[in-house]
Image (cartoon, rainbow, N blue to C red; front, side):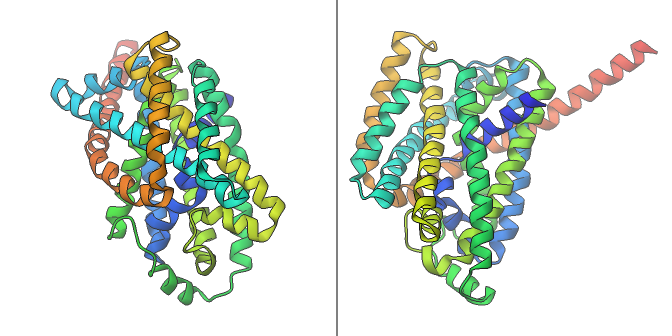
Amino acid sequence: MKKVLQMASAFIGIIIGAGFASGQEILQYFVSFGYMGIVAAILASTLFSFMGMTLTRLGSKMHATSHSDVIYQISGRFLGKIIDYILIFALFGFGVVMIAGSGSTLHQQFGFTPIVGSGLMLILIMLSVMSNVDRIVKVIGSITPFLIVSVIFLSIYSFVTKDLSFSELHELSMTQKPAVSNWLISTLNYVSMNIVLGASMTIVMGGDEGNEKTATLGGLVGGLGIGFLIIMSYFTIFSKINVVGQVDMPLLKIADDLSPILGIVYSIILYGMIFNTAVSLFYSLGARFADIGSTKFKWIVNFLGIAALGLSFAGFTDLVSLFYPIIGYMGFILFVILAFLWFRMSAASEIDNKIIDKNGS
């Protein structure tokens, strides 16, 4: 059970980066649809659970050390190459967004110029990504519980202290610019985008777990955890949309308004969650092109990190609204393949069980 919870916590940490922990993703993908946003959040929770257990199960079943180990086997050479390139592009693009988010966090909370937070994040990534998978999973998972507690607390506070009626909050929410125009497509796009984001590291994490059942449960519980956080974050931001509708970091703004000390604590947690996702992104990128821990691996990570820092100055909010939907649409291919593969694996398992039962009798 301990291993299941550790993997679940790590999966949550991989998915929840700058956009989620700041509240910007939830604002654009869910709150902007008003009441329908909660329906979208519940649907997203179901899909995350399904995709989480599919990815960890695949990784464990194939003993994967890189996403390419799995992608080419399940998709074939031609389609596998397309998905592989999508993942590489997405990993680097999300890395840019994470570094931009780290700069925005320290800028909004402490007034530092964005280069301070972004530069510090790059240094931490370079130092940490050289570790092995097991150590990365522990680091990623260790910060996640603090975020869960913080989001629950902020959700209760926001709901109890809301200034407007539900109908007024709904109308204000509907004035926000959504990342995608339709709530259902937005939900599918959001889950797809995040699966692209987390697929590489989640597959590697599953590959490091020899027990397929443990890996599957870890992905399932992690997906449910992500869904719970989406729903709580939705209520938090929806209840205070009149206050946070125009800021880069809505959840950080709510925490800071409640208490400057809490604002500082949450900014540290937020920075840690960004670090979690960024580490998994650049680790996965390095593992795709070179043996983990090799000199080539280190050079690739350092070069891509510096390049991401340079591109991060495009601005955090603009990067989220522009880049995330594009990756979400590209990720539909992977989404469909994983869904098909799950049912195929389940059918194969049933056949194996029937054969075992028949032989046993």
